[in-house]
Amino acid sequence: MRSTTLTMKYVRRLCAEHQREPKDVYLLGQRILTYYSRISWQLKHQAAMIGDEVSDFGNGDLDEALSYLDVFAPDSLRIRIETDTSSIFRSRLYLEVIQEAIVTVRDYPEKGRHYYEILDHCYLQDHPMTNADLCEVLHLSDSAFYDHRKEAVMLFAVSFLFFVLPNMEKIIYKIRQEMDRQPAEVTGYVEHIGA
Image 1: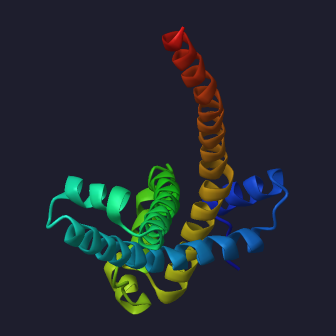
Image 2: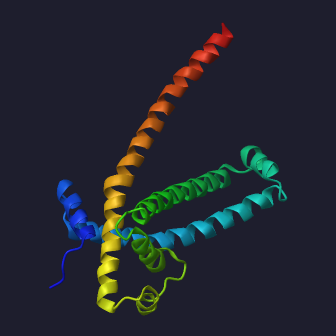
Image 3: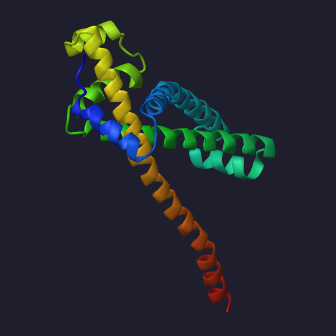
């Protein structure tokens, strides 16, 4: 029977504190990591396509292209470009949140860099390594590799759910508060100038 590592004890304790089943946390972490490379690939290609399309409007000059979109472009084209650009920013934010959780794993004191390597080679690379190749590179048996990969995914999932997301929610809340205040400040400033 395998002994429970310090990492798994820590992960299980966090799951219990947050009233989450470890199995559910693991599956969520695996799903998020699996989507990472797809979203990254889509983001690269979508950004390149929009960049090419927009630069065509201004003969390579960004200011000219933006002026065209703002003044002359049909509404349907402008709305499509805005929607696509908004989608890019949302995808980029999603990737940044995942990357923040991965950095948290890397900085974990108990084999954090080792877990980071596993996540990087299994999920983050454009062309992930095979499990057999990873076992060889990391000098692990198959069973040890699967145990370490599970620990890495679990550590990523708790980092994502219990540390990074709550912090992002606080930041978004502060940004929304700031945005809610700005219109009143601008209105007050405009009224002051007009008086």
